[in-house]
Image 1: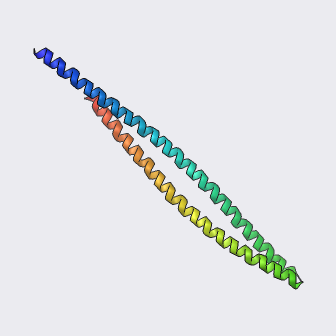
Image 2 (image 1 turned 60 degrees about the horizontal axis):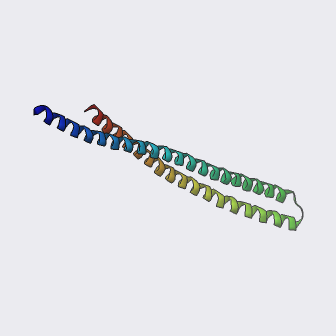
Image 3 (image 1 turned 30 degrees about the vertical axis):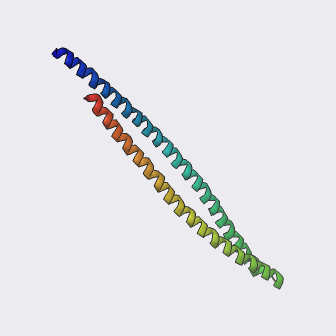
Amino acid sequence: MFCFVFLFFYSHSGKEYDIKISYEKANQIQYAWRNRVGRNQLRALKECYDVQLKESSAKICQQHIRGKLARMNYKVSKNQKEREISMAIRIQSNWRASKERKNYSQIQLEKAAKMEEKAAICIQCAWRSKKARKKVNKYVHH
């Protein structure tokens, strides 16, 4: 009688442990997959913002060079009309450069915020994965 009760209890609890282990292993796989997807999204986000920052930097350099050329042209020009055109180009160049510097700063702030958010999600996912591994190990070793 004792042997039958022991076998029934052992087989019943064994199935429960198998179910718990398979459930936790499935969670562990899902956490690992989400972590990988999150890291890939983080990498893609960084590349996207890096491209935007490079474009903005190029615009800032172009505006700086155009302003410098306009100042040089202003100094050597003798004609009043040419001087007015050079000054107009210089003013426009300074305005566009200022506008692009603000845009560059905004892109940097936006990049930092989104990267921080995605990094936090990746860290959370890694933590959940670690907890799931511990849970699986606990079930397996008991």
